[in-house]
Amino acid sequence: MEIIPDKRKLVGLVEQAHEGKLCLPNFQRDFVWPRDQVADLLRSILRRYFVGSLLLLRCDPQKPPFAPVFLRGAKPLYQQARPEHLVLDGQQRLTSLIYALTAPDYPLKDSSQRRWFYVDLDLLRAEPDNHEIVFDCSKRELDGLDEVEAQYKRRVLPCTRLLRSGDFMNWRDGLDDWLRDHDAEEHQRFRKEWRDGATKAINDFQTFEVPLVELPRVDDGDTDAIGRVCAIFEKLNSTGIELSVYDLLTARLYRSGIKIHDLWEHACKENTRLATWSEGKADTNKFGVLVIRTLAVLRGLDPKPRILIDLKPEGFERDWERSTRAMDRALQIATDIGQDGFGVFDRKWLPGFGLLPVLAALRTEIEERKLGEGPRADLRRWYWSNVFLERYSSAIESKSRKDYSELLAHWVEDKPEPAVFAEARARIGASGFSVADSASFASSVYSGIFSLLAIAGGRDWRRGESIQLQDLEDHHIFPRAYLRRHGISNKNEVNSIVNRTLISDETNGKIKDKAPAEYIASPEISPSGATEALLAPHFISPTGLIVLKSATEGLSKEAAAKKYEEFRKNREATIIAKIRDVCGVPSPDRK
Image (cartoon, rainbow, N blue to C red; front, top):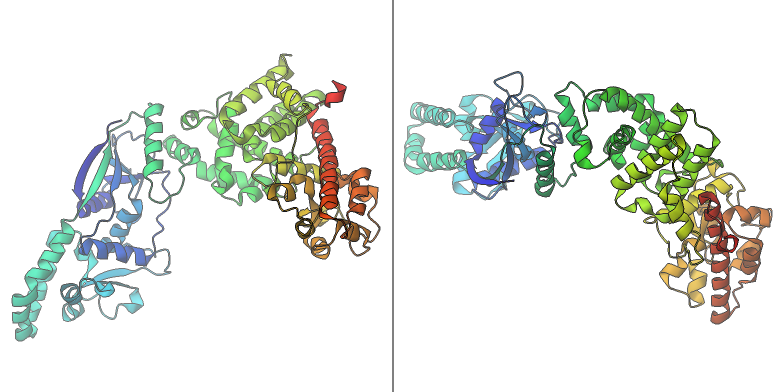
């Protein structure tokens, strides 16, 4: 794609934007600059500082590749947007200048009232580096500056006179006449000392040029070219806000009368779990994208970005509603802590958002086709296998389509079972399979094991209540301080999942740095006693409990290390047995 560098007068671009010849693609975010940033931009231009470059996309006014919207504050020549260019980078700067140079009737981000911007000409001439050369006022702060005579008295130029050269010249000539009539001495000084300087400063503002990168026109149907435009936007986007396929598709479908923002709001009203998990915002954890991926999978398409931004409008609203219902149902299953759910009792324990679209699509197929026990069990095996293989940590799009197609064909056409099941048997069923290296939320294995703890019915040791009634966190079983006192400080060993379980902060605070043998025997920690029944849902076996009871403070470093290693191996074996069970994978000794 050819990129055309250029330089243009910034005020000219502002005028084009004000007239509606420059528009925004509908995926751009809102104007967010506060008044200080607007004023700083004006100061920078008056001082002829570099203010960054702009990125424009040339387009056919009758058929732009994205739905166009006017910049905020613009007064376009046409009611219907017919842009000659779309602004990909530069929205905040251009909209700031529209605001300062035309004073539209709306407040800025940090103000509840409309603002007017002014240039202090005396200060600009004497101290151009002074911060006060540009200032702004609300209506009640104007102190008469909305009247031209007060402006002349104070030598204060309204920024609304900066957009067009003739407007400034008329204001300057009016000042000349006013001074001649009211103060002959000051009029002479004006003529001799600063009329020409002020004129030059304002002329420099009005002729200030910015570097500009123009992308050539792309055909509305050329999704590859549109994809390249989007990639360039992401590279050069100065706001640092990631552009998503949700934003792009919103803009693409707007022309077909499909308003995805409205569809999203309706979906959140109808689907309480989706609303809660997304906090009502499509950007939160990319739930807007997740719904669109679900829609694509249900249409039998690869959920790759270039496919998603070209989803056809025919039947879109129907498919969107189906997909949002499917996502809500997937969240219901994911958060259920019964034996048939996935135990995600809090969103931070979700083993990866990438699994949700496929889970949503497959569960929808099961329910709409009224499939029986086998497919439902397969779906559970598929979910847990992917969690503990960490398959959805990369190449999500290709795996999504493959898994959906293979499972559906297996259920409906009696085709072979999906490849992920064979991979799970080979890897999770191997004698060398281990989870001990998992030590943080970055691993889906870590979150998956805590979800299994919730399903197993783990209770807080001190309170003895269900996880549904408690705010439990991941805490150490062998306290870190105890291990450190006994010479064990390797972070991966100390923080490993095999040394973590779900207990309350209060219980953990009472355990503190005690030896396991001490706190296990304490009625303050376990009022009903640290029984096998209490600890089994925490994947602590009878053997593991014996080890805990023998891990006293008086052990030597060598003995403590041996006890800890024995506990780690025993608990890892208990956890792996549970993982193999939910994945439908036999242990090596049963093969």
